[in-house]
Length: 240
Image 1 (tube, one colour):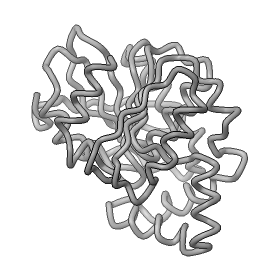
Image 2: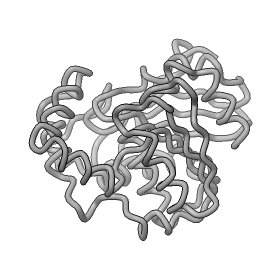
Image 3: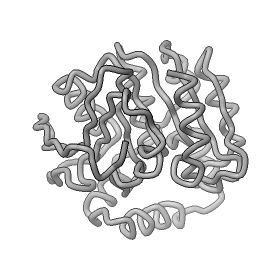
Image 4: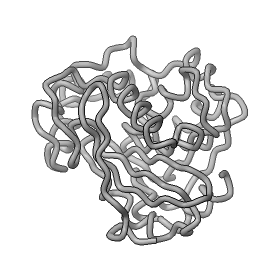
């Protein structure tokens, strides 16, 4: 399938209107959540590798891409609620969620809360308590400023970026106890050369989510689904 051939859809949620790109089919259902500041466009290369029988939905998170930009507090919890409502309306709630980076944080949060889907795929997920604390300790105030600069460069509004960074507190971080609440099958995909969320944190996700499977993509950085689309496709299809 090709990204350009996917159908545009808009879903009204209680928090704002979400845009998504759809390819409806009879196969496995997968909802894709992009990273901070990005949009559905990041999946273009991976989509080209996927078989037509998959039923896929690429979501623009609230405040991103072509989705609505309401004046709200953009927390992971808010994003998770909107995504769950979209999945329910599009009959995707029984399928898988594939979340990259910030989208992985959102996917993990959904999976911890009475998730009725088939499983989750976390690609270089953000949000782990140990990783955030290490980065804050190492970079101080520059940590948040760097994230904000990169997100704005990708096209996100300064309001959404600022609100998102302010919304996340230690209470929302992914901890051992929270991740232990994920009981559905989980695949963690990591780039061996990721310099945003280093691969050393992969073993913690693998340990904290019981029964999870870890696949390290050799030579890949933080966006393996773009730079190593074929390898990510292979481990994804093996998992689902």
